[in-house]
Length: 96
Image (tube, rainbow, N blue to C red; front, side):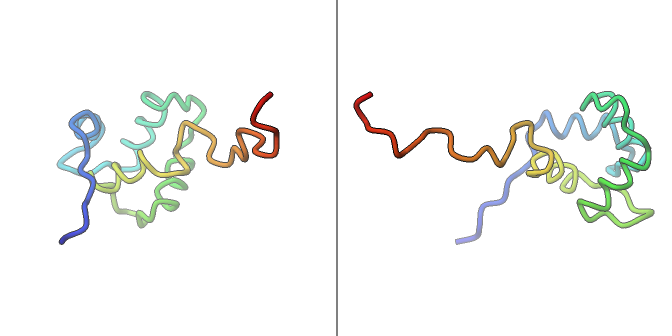
């Protein structure tokens, strides 16, 4: 049985199409995406380059749909804090 692979939802595909040319998102496209969609209004081109490097895109290469999908759902891009710790005190008595 083959492992399941996630496919980008239609909304992600459409977003990628809006911010790419010929299936490739360049640094400049990605920078514009960070500002316009992710509302990182102070993002610089250097920030976009650093993110490309963090997700494994080599200098001079662009981001394809798979890489964009991976970036969107990566832990470091999560809208929720990932290290929240214990939410409930499990040492407290059950009847309080």
